[in-house]
Image (cartoon, rainbow, N blue to C red; front, side, top):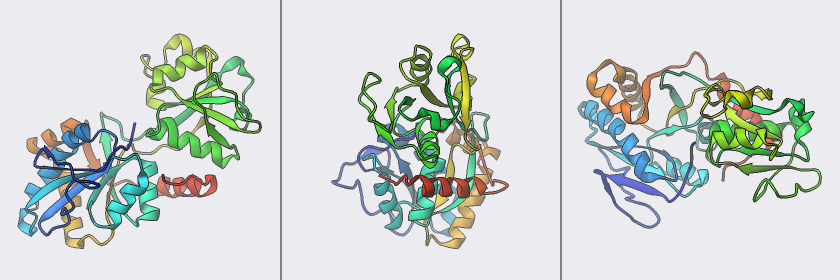
Length: 306
């Protein structure tokens, strides 16, 4: 669900291509930038721009003149890390896995989480057929699991690091008809939740990974399929999106940014800015323990940012 593609900065609703960066002056005084990693800069620009424009309009009294959207779109988290370290992106909106990597490698600071489409948090599930003989993650050695796509938090990153932390060595395969190398676990990308559940149901793969929200959505996991499935792993619950700020951003500005995020759902203009992304509101979590757990899983699994 969360992906990356060619580095991009979108200014004033115009797509300006500069190689390798689109506009490198976003750290100029008076400009507040916001971004993330994506492989679809057009869609993400349209979703993020209303938010950063709203924030900029509320921060004029402390010197913010306008907002800009900066997107890492080359499918590399390492590019996003570099942009944050270099001060090209002030505010980052990311999935828990990428947010944790940014916290560790770019010293970015998480400040808020988002409610989206009425949901505060979700988790990742790994499921198999009841008649598969598989009882735990370790039993997937020599088998194939279907993930959603390379950018999905619940359908790739979370189940992958859980499997690697259990000692499984994963290798990407070109299709579910491929032979799994000895001693390893193969994985393929199905492209959608329905494909994942269908491939497990028809025994094309041994297991699948989806979010708990997908699990209860009949369009993704039909009831006829689910009756034949069992869940063998559930990750911790966590928010879908985390708001972070780059290290070194002015403390007064950070304080005001946080306050304005928390107030967005209280006004019509704020709610309008949230709609393109489907956000309900931003809140301060009771704790950041889920990120500490993720950090440990990433360390144990050896999963690195690309």
